[in-house]
Image 1 (tube, rainbow, N blue to C red):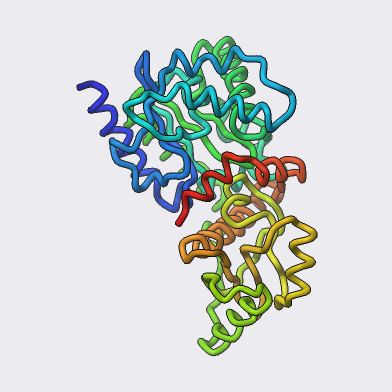
Image 2: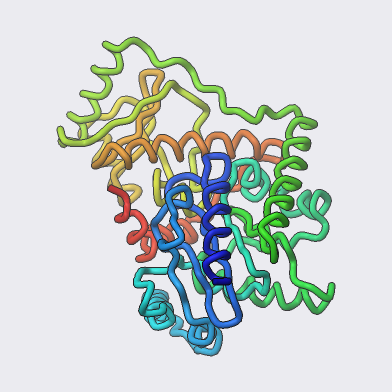
Length: 358
């Protein structure tokens, strides 16, 4: 009966923080735990559509074995081993693939954990001076410099949580992850809500004090005729008439990788200028993928195999642009390194998440 109530509470929290103010696409994850079991969001699903039956139950004792292994130094081998250990910890009555962040959720003692990627937060975490100013705005929070997500991130943050607890006598309620997002942990849903309210309010006030708008200026879309001709130019250049294309007016774009989710859903770099077959080939040769965001003729296009993926590509391009705008309050945008970017692009976990989209 206790777990039924907790499942209801974490479902409500997931819906509350599954809005575009906090996440986009399959981003973010939530969990609750008892002494023996961790219930966590499945990989690739959306917070807004979770039901109590959606959550993957994991044996915490088995999950803890991840912390004792000596993983291979080779990245692919390490990730295969971690995936295997994660699968072994999933309880048989809730089949599914748990969020890759499950071990980090497990590492926090608090009953409820809600991890999101709000633009208001990422304006700080994806900025040049984010770490320094974060200490001033949120002195009791834990800041984690960028680490590859998944096992590596978990082990690093787990150590920092233990260091924090030794210093302050308790674990942090708030963890900011550079170029990633925020974790909030508490024993009651009301405390989760209160912490998020406080964080968002303080950041809103900081942006307003810096004269930075909280909304992204987006120009009007040109005439219908222009849109039709521009879309056809994209289809011709990419030699695929079955592609779906979403469109918006022009905005100041982000020209680099901002966070793992931005890389997964809209790629690290947009294609700028009128697309041609040769231009697309050159772009693909340079970056290793076809563009999912194209900007020309006073418009921004999300381009993908399905309507949903095209819309998400455009949505993440707009979110990235807003993060870049907000980051001006913290000294400007701090893009991810090429090495970090390549890890995400080649990570099996993110490939799996992307495949969950239809």
